[in-house]
Image (tube, rainbow, N blue to C red; front, side, top):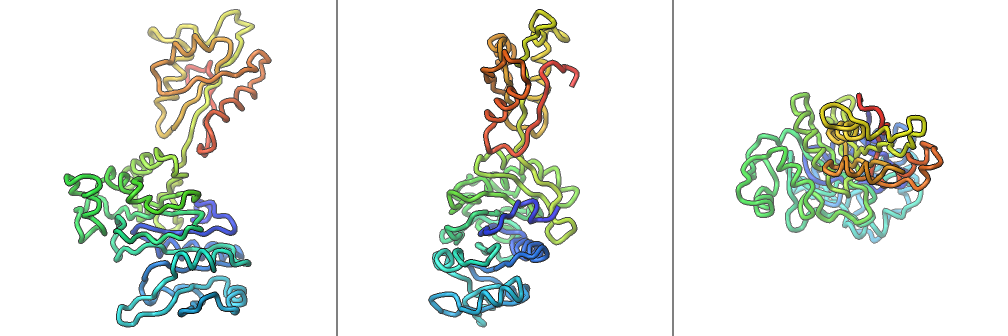
Length: 361
């Protein structure tokens, strides 16, 4: 899938990309996708980027030290559909100097007629992985979507300044024993409130991008993604290679399960879910055990009714939660499904629905 689809970009978004390992490529790839469907896009930076980076856009505009945006910007945006904004070029450094985050919040974020603002809000010296230093990352408060980026080509590399920006910061935070960039270390950095999530605006959606995927890196990427989804603030995790087609290979989401177990067993005359199954188990325990062991699932909800106490006793040692359907006597399965979905909450992206009387699943 493309980046815009995987990120679920909405009109009016302010998107900040931080981290390392493909921020620039991801930003301009995303801008191109949005322009292709008719959006008007501004790209910019709140840091210092290579002097040629503004040239990647159809039109670039140097604002200098002007206190406000030029009157010509709406017309330029209408004509070119994509404009890169920056302050000025510093020829001695070979850098384009970006916008102050607070100035951007006050002047650019409220600008009408802009469908999306995409911001490179971190620097990484072209290395694949980083932790922010004391003054980083300069993320505007108006950011509605934060995309922490990490290059999977960092895996297996030494945790040193030649391969990782802020290697010493990582060791100081996670412990001096960290010597190599492993899947666990990458997940720990990206999930940490003072590292990968540093300065994240409270209301922003957070979707990390694990870039530079290859077939042999996919298992490690999946491991990192599953660990990241343990952080409630992270909405989903993308795995891909933004310079390839398609740019996103997987969108790992938080998926829950609802086991429907509130039936009355009227025709059987006895609680069917409590009948024996296999060696010392019961039907409901067998079903719940299978679901709880399923790979990639988050929270598991069991919706019970008349036999709730007995069902809870059967599954007490399993990683799931039993909830009550107060309308179970009406015999409508949809009422149990609604109870289960409500119990999962809004942070769940998808749901697996399982019938409690199908032990062969």
